[in-house]
Amino acid sequence: MNPSALLLLVVAFGFLYFVLIRPQKRRQQTQRQMLSDLKEGDEIVTAGGLYGEVTGFEEDDVLVRIAPEVEVKVARRAIGGVVNREPGEGEPVTAEEPVSADEPLTAEERDKDSADR
Image (cartoon, rainbow, N blue to C red; front, side, top):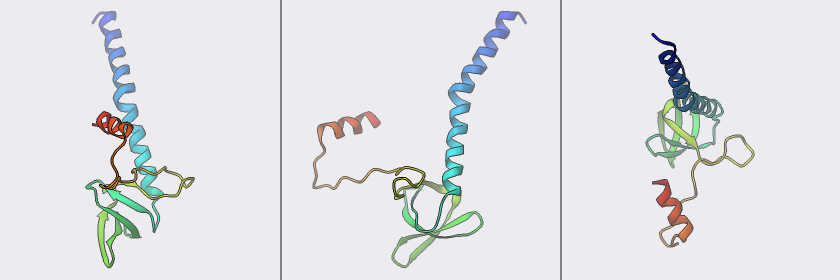
């Protein structure tokens, strides 16, 4: 194998590391930290979009109240984020306030929504 081909392989691996591997590890670390910081009373959203309040913990599961007198067991790894934590308590709020159907979107909000899609 000639030196230029070896150099190309090293550069390609370095590029993949900084573009794919490193950011993924950072996201995994952030997710692990969020799951370890969960406490009773936190408002969460699951990966499937179910909102609820943490009411208890089991080994690999979290008990979540999704309605009055309705509690479900959710796998800890299925929790997508904490949505109602007070500012200054670690993770920032992960979900925006929903816009009611009565309030029209401003031009800036429509542009932002279009850019997100």
